[in-house]
Image (cartoon, rainbow, N blue to C red; front, top):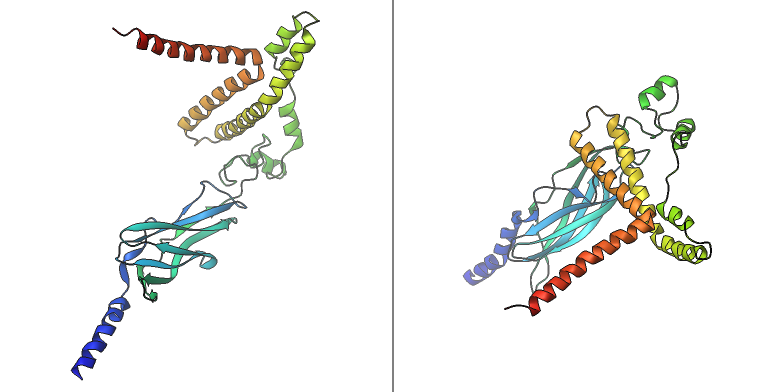
Amino acid sequence: MLRKLILTAAILMPLFALASALTNAGFLQGGIWYSKDPFFAGETVRIYAALFNSGPDDISGTVEFFDNQKSIGVSDFFVERGGKFTQVWNDWKAAEGQHSIEAKIIKASLLRVGKPPIAVELAKQKTQSSSLSIQKDTDGDLIGNDSDPDDDNDGIPDIEEIKNGTDPLISNPRAQKKENVIPDNEEPEKNITDELISLLPRDSEPQISAARNAVKEVLAPTVEFLEEKKNEVRKRLQALAQNPQADSKEKIIDYSYLSALTAASFIFKNEVVLYIVAAFAAYLVLKMIFRRIFRRFHRP
């Protein structure tokens, strides 16, 4: 009889030990983070959370993600024993408005070699909630409409559009047209290479022009990329100029970035300048190489 009691107690003791929630595994502090920041209504982002396991057994289970206490997806996980970590995630399409994002462990099991999984409860089975206010970004300038003084980026501030009775979310074509027209006293951007080719003898001009067009086709994607970046920076600077509370450091950084993009765009648009810069860079590299070779063979 005593032997049966001892055997029964030995079997039940691990179960009683597991009845209380495990404190050496669960979610890490810090809660939720996202694949990009900022993001706006209509964008799909990835929601992340991290789990740890400092216990003696591997743990597997399932995490469920919630938005305003409504399920938005589940993710299975496995965390090795001995202080290991792992990430869980779920893709989510953000909608305009207020959101509270969190994750919960809805199922967890201890994994032991040669034994069936044992269901357990983890003390840290829920993340801290992440509160978000998702805005629309009508003009795509990475400034939410609530903070953007010109939501449609047509050059007319929202306050003026509201006074005029026009929609601040719909671009005014007249304003855009005025911006795109080159003033009478402003000449289109000149290309140094075009001017140099025009000075060459007529017999050699077709061959040189053909070679130059081939180079332009290779450089076209780079030039297009630089122009897109310049337009993005100009939009940000325009928004900052209309925002009296904008950070002056941010303006300086954007102006410096725009200057660098403008210089790069000029070099890639004017092939002669690009050739000169490339030749000078090659000269510096070769000079350094020959200097090292000379030192190696003329050591005392």
